Image (tube, rainbow, N blue to C red):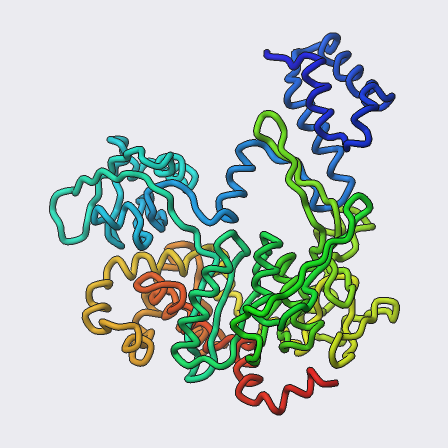
Length: 532
């Protein structure tokens, strides 16, 4: 088994040292670690993999620092960078696996699969002459076969509904965009809606393009949906915040023991500096999302609606290692303009930290704002109206909206958890795509006229029973039926059109969204929140 020589280990460990420690190459701790590894390598009873030992040591060293300082292998670095960089290289399809068959949900617009004629609903039965139907193919297996370097070729054999013989396509792989903008549409004549799922390198350009379109269509105010947005690049959070703040307003500052205070300010180029703004957040909104919400709240520029955000306010710096692996080391903390620390406490250890969201639910925080208690030591005042806001972990919204549990029966929950609804929709669209598009050639007609009938619900019930999920006898008239129908209609729209159409339907019954619309339609009533 290949072993790392001791000099190589010293070089690796040197990269973990700060410049001030560089001159202390042979300090006692470093020498001790190298000596211990050398003993294990030369005297242990069995063969050992020194690379794995070093990786385990790195993991152990970082895990006790804070929850977000981590070691990542070369493969993990590549996977995590793809969504943040905004693209990957492959054939460009959205897919799913149903009944051991690889289905194309839709080719990505402008991607290589669309260019050669691959269509939604196609079944891929062979990839590079390898049979992939009926062989237990996994999602990871699909990725391994279809992803690849730009310019390389992949052959696929496709079975298309209504075509007797298989179709052969040669697809030349290319860069495929990963969009951070989930949805953008005009709610009514004056309110725009934009939902972001992450902060990647393309986020600001995507936002600007969508915002300019909405403004041309008549949008005078904006709902920015950052729920379940786990963050991403700090620079993109700064640029997005800049869209709402007037010139020379501090957006965020970072500071750490070995990182001097660094401040970021707004410019005069924002698209919504004079518009009414509502930002939606929840317990899944983290990091960059919290920077945007915190800046808007601290400057009294908009109303924050939802539930307390996640509470991730640590700045990580990527530090590359010789083999392509990486350490993401926490070097500073984020502070909102008032000085609030976004990061929640991790003093009780990582295990307790990881249970925080579960504890919020068990303590009733997701259901009742009054269950949250902040000490006076965490009290801050906004910069314009001197409203009271609190630090110490996450951004607390101005208007609290509890999590909605009333409409979720056990039956509905099982359908969601076991993925039955998604699989049913995939099968339903495969059978009915042409009929739906013939009857509803535009989304506008579909939105207005399409109804999920009792017949479709009965088909879903039979489908679910085949998966071991039995409907309660009173479920058809129960609390979940309208929500199931709405979700089915939204999922059909997503697979035939896109995510914007999905959210236009799904938001009809979303309490946070509806509260945001109410606030913007009655701004004079609610702006007093910003003037307290």
